[in-house]
Image 1 (cartoon, rainbow, N blue to C red):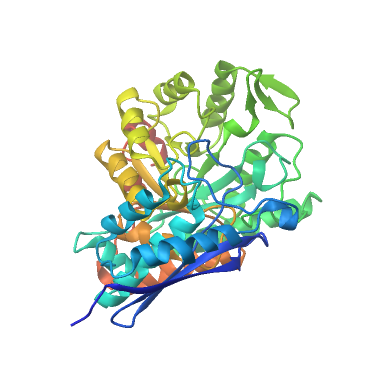
Image 2 (cartoon, one colour):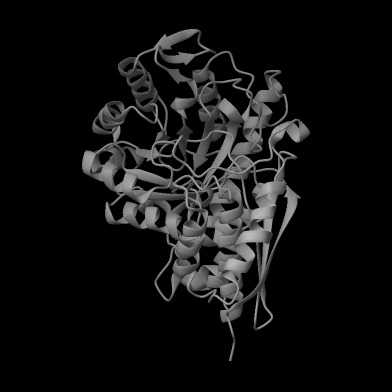
Length: 436
């Protein structure tokens, strides 16, 4: 018989995909099994999300994490000793109470989320099952639709273009594996188009091509051409997903599109994005207006929510209460779930569950500063999220997660169900007809 009580816990300082320090936590249970997880970090962040604890000062631009590692080893470790790793909700409540701040700033969101995920891994190992199966608890699951960056922009590419992510989704694929095959061809075609135009200039934070476009719309034009060049039908087989991250270029004066050299008010920005939806095969738009622009969010969703998924990221910051309010106000129809935004696994799940209860699309997401940690691959399957956003189709911190879902799909065998088009239930039949 296993004993899933926590025997010990150790925090260490490791490095993320941007060469910045981050926190890793390793949990050891009384029965001898261990669990380990690494905290990610975002570049584009919402004001309401859990805060990382950084050291400040000059070293590594103030981003070192010795204080957060100290939180793990000196406060969290003794507090969690002898607690049942199988009771994730109780562990996460203890973590939140121990920190005692609404933004997790005392001990650090990075210390808390790494600990929370490490405990989750240890509990699954103690139960002798894969993490996704431990999370599912016997409930049916789907293999998620991958949302994969082709061009990086915004805060992920030194604001070379204003829109943060130009991504593709392949809902007509027959499996997760086939969706990755299609994306690989599109990524390769996009690279060939950029090289031919003399615009290939490396990759951005999340592995997408570094944008070298004359306008934001040129990225859409090039991505649509890449889909066609790879042999796929835009809209019918492959769609575009945008992360506008409008808060990153919004201010009291309006939304400043630096690449296009113009400033737009909310109405004009909605009209611009609406024009793109009409012209290009866009199936999903994330944070189309600023995180405090509730009326703008509601207007965008009212006008285009039947045609595409409207995701709240900075707007919802993986917060269940915000998701519930968005459902009441009709401001979005999908929620992005980032465990480190919430601070613990339990709080992230509560936000996802609130989205499901509202009939929203649910998307488990990585951050721009990532690692080899594959926890979110398991969350996306075990929670039956339907969608997974990791970044691009290059760089090992991204591929580790795509490859982990491939293994999960293979392990499911004939029982594997790919979410595909079912992940967009709010797109109306009249729009669906255009895909036939």
